[in-house]
Image (cartoon, rainbow, N blue to C red; front, side):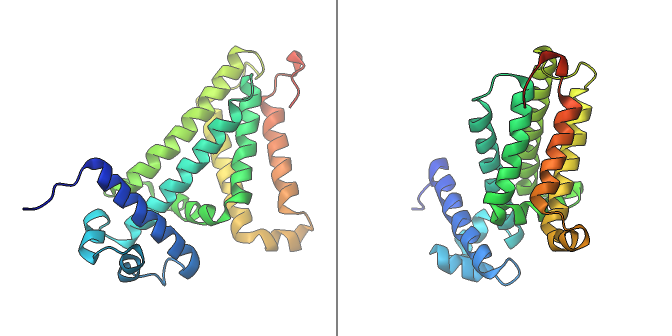
Length: 217
């Protein structure tokens, strides 16, 4: 008689396989890793592996999702220490940058994910899950900016959804460029990536901050 697997057991199996794949991708690279090798290292039958992940690309997106969830946890845990909407928005930007520096292995996967066309989400449930998690991060940013307008720490002229989207695209694009071409920009200008990032944050803070409140960033 075939044993029924509980949803908890399925989740644990998915988690285990994803963790194994993540380590292998970092060690060998995505292109040089095979599903056979992942099954062997995860100590599961190949059929079991394909039961949960129909392709290596699915596993790639599962790793991206882990990274996005880790980023969300970092942001929420850190920003809850602050009171005003401006402080939370400012610190969210700081934590995004911190994630870039402290989890470069995840960011490599996220850079690749961000470059994919949105239509991929129409056919792949793992991509949809990544888009949903990205959407949660965006909603957090919008909520902080909205709070800032309400508590007067952010300028009244700021448009929460529209300006959040601009900041999001700018920040993601900036970090992608620095990740891909950091040495090139350093040779061109003798300006370090940290200096570029600091300037970017200062510009956003200056654009957002309602100076009439005396709020310090």
